[in-house]
Length: 368
Image 1 (tube, rainbow, N blue to C red):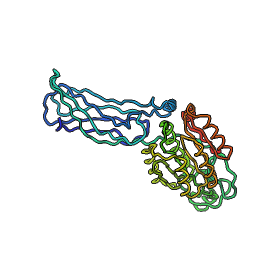
Image 2: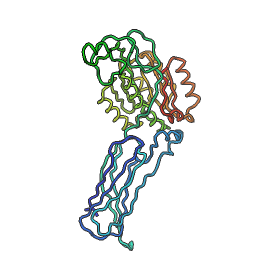
Image 3: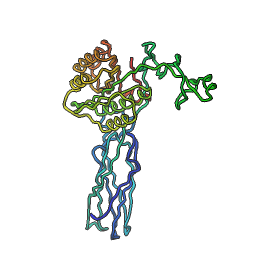
């Protein structure tokens, strides 16, 4: 059996969390010795011992162990004299992360059960499940115009009231921006150019520090919210950066380019809660190293008194601090609610995301 050639073919190597794939195992043997049966078994890694059923998973936010499963794939084949045979199976509801399928166990024997043979074949195939970006609705515009500082509560990327000049038409320009007089004069489509906006940089800070009793499903939600906010903010043509704080801190500067977006997506695919330091302590250290941003948004699954004190100091260095607290409503204590009220009283925007909000589409985040 050790001379058999076993290969694995995945229908997709890169998917989104919650999707499924089809796997085909092919067994090729050189000698057509008659075999009564073969039992082929995929040995799954621990990273695949849970499921992701998209928004529905948040109904178990207070009981995340409900999403743990013991995946088992065993198929019996009767190859007889065949040199090549295949089995096909599906892996459904793949959770976020990088998963490596490494081993296939094959058992065989004679018809009477007197002889039994088994061999484990080492075959490595990687499957990557990116975090799913959700539709998200933010209730305040993140940029101001040069002629005024009043905030608007709609996401208009350009001030269409004050035109500062004209330029050639570019893909993505609205039909209403066309300057018909200049178009007729120059015999080519010209669009109005509007007053430039002030740059508003946003820094997202993701709490990926481990602590005893951490709710892993709440952490998954915080990763989804982070990648969703990045996509939505970039859609508004606003520079956004990410600071991930765990055992090590990784900073992606406030930029709006495709390459950095891909790096962030890869990072958020691999990230897991780790480290032994308290998030509030590491947050205090990391913020002192960074340049002040106009808006800082912190996504966390834990609020403590030390966290509140750190936020109070951060507020002195930034234009606005927004805290997005992700947790099951059944796991939030009265102390947590009191801490959130104190932060709001001191001018910090605190937005609570529980299973109720996370099961909605889109997710609503209040920036006020």
